[in-house]
Amino acid sequence: MADSSTQRFGLSHGFALIATLAAAVLVAAPLWTDTPGVLPGAGVILFAIANWATGALPQHITALVMFLVAVVFAIAPPNVVFSGFHASATWLVFGGFVISLAAQRSGLATRIVQALMNNLPGRYMAMAGGLAVAGVLLSFIMPSASGRAVLMAPLAVALADRLGFAENTRARFGLVLAAGWGTTIPAFGILPSNVVNMAFVGASEGIFNISFTYFGYTVLNFPVLGLVGMAIVVLLIGVLFGAEPKVQSEAEMQTRWSPDERRLMGIMLVALAFWMTDSLHGISPAWVALAAALLCVTPGVGVLPASVMNKDINYGPWLFVAGVIAVGAIANHTGVGGAMGDWLLAHVPLTRDGGIVTFYEIFAISAAVGLVTTFPAAPPIVTSFSDAIAQATGWPLESVLLAQVPSWMVYPFPHEAPPVAIAMALGGVPMREGARLLIPYFVVGLIVVLPLQYLWGKLLGVYP
Image (cartoon, rainbow, N blue to C red; front, side):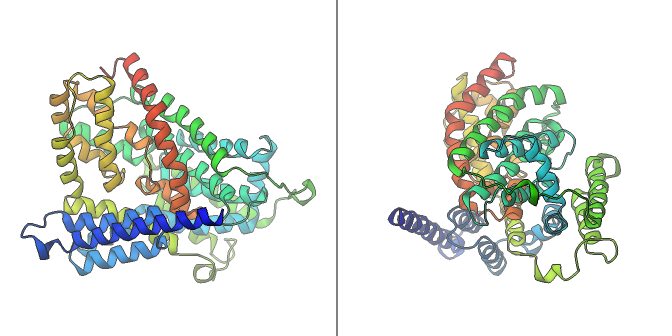
């Protein structure tokens, strides 16, 4: 076992080293070519993705190195490189750290977990499935995926504690992944439940004047990609991360509400009300989370001392999330995403009237763009050249547009979906453990989920 682990460690670090050397060559493109184009941008993105995926460097160190190289070599201006620090998702994570700590120390998370355990069988897969289902249900009433991740990740951590899974154990990682995946990926199939969906709809309307209805979009994408995908992910989590729970005795469970629990519950109910109605008041979920976090450390109102800000919060995951957001910003600014799309369009053979073959080809193009730019940036890029794909394949333009959606729901690396990365950051899950789940799911998705999705879409008359 030790030899096998050492071998995997060596392979991952060897891959990261090779990728880093290749990235250095790309960053140095102005030295060896008169037309560097997008190569330096591709270099820093390659460095970040390779090191996050392998865990060769700590996640936050990788992000900091990427920031430094991008600024020193003028690959992108500072306002682009550090855009993650003024992105709402990053501040949502900051608020989530404080809220999570408050939930754990007040006992509120334990109480909610106790209610969850009272209604689920005491088995690992059932608990993972319960977290995933709770995340999906929350997707119908709360439109912010990042906000849902902030709510669900602390519950997953508290549930892991309750089941006897210590920090840095795979069983604990699996529960956090169930919460993060469940509250994010199936929601890609529910029209207003993710920023990515709305970016896609906005690009389709703005470029082609094509709009999608809530019912039509959700009926096409949620049953197979959402529900079947969730069932497969929960099964994989049970197989790859499952362990025997060691539940505490009933006597150790809380029975009476403490004053801290009541205060925090009041803060969270107000925050939840603002999160659910953000389309009415226009306040970002991030600022709601930040306000809730500040209330949690306000003397006489909150449940935490102000000293937790510099004593108990680990800012490494916060830097990582800022880095994930910066990857998309750098890809957009340098033109890496668009250049990659153009290259794929020119080199991927598109089959005319190819049925499921054409469906896979469109998926491959969209998936490749998403790997580099992350999902919030991918839909506008792929949508921009969807007309060319439609002309080459003979598919209706609306069918081509909708065929890119599966690439957001069947994907191999956690950084591609920032809300999943947020949940992992809050739960202390390394990127390599996220890839441990998502790479097998990607393979199963290619073999099982995508054919089912194509047949379902063809039955509905969406795909030719």
